[in-house]
Length: 118
Length: 111
Image (cartoon, rainbow over all chains, first blue to last red; front, side, top):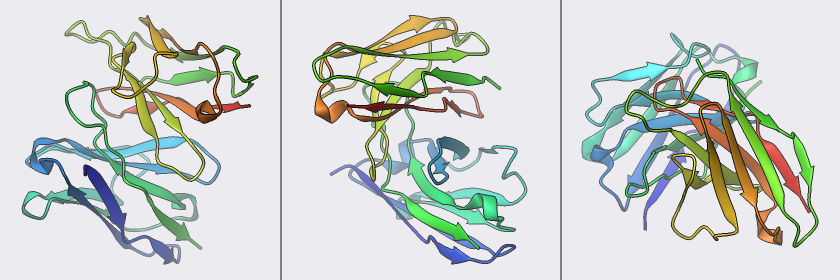
């Protein structure tokens, strides 16, 4: 089965750090650009960052630039989001996703992991 | 960065009746390769988003043909020809592939 599974969320105080993980299965992880997307309580979706298949290129949205870092380990089929300097407004459900643009590659989302900054 | 504006914010629909959601971009989504990179997603409460439409009008495998996408340039539409109970939820458009990828604010479709 093609799936992504996030972990690492939890309760953290403002200014604290967390590292989210996302493990892929059922598809060739190393072929895909990977993304982190978050959804604040009762609100919409915000794209945060992406990383190219070999990990040599990353981009982050301005609101998290300098605080969050996306990375990957293709040998472990895993994606990561290191979050430092957390703020109350970072409270959200965090999803990893492939976000693709064609029908012949998987557009997959994980189930999400909840981060609460309080 | 493209700003994606969806309307309406909320859409009550009667079972069996049609529904239409608009997504407007602040800039043309026709990219240098001539393609339009616009996806539509559906999210049910407590679930992750699921892609329904890619490249503005191409239906994903398993998506019923009562759901369709159309549009070009800056104006895009998702249509449900006959509302069914499983269609309730929040719909999002998303543009790319240049970063930052941008989602519309969402449209809540209720029975």
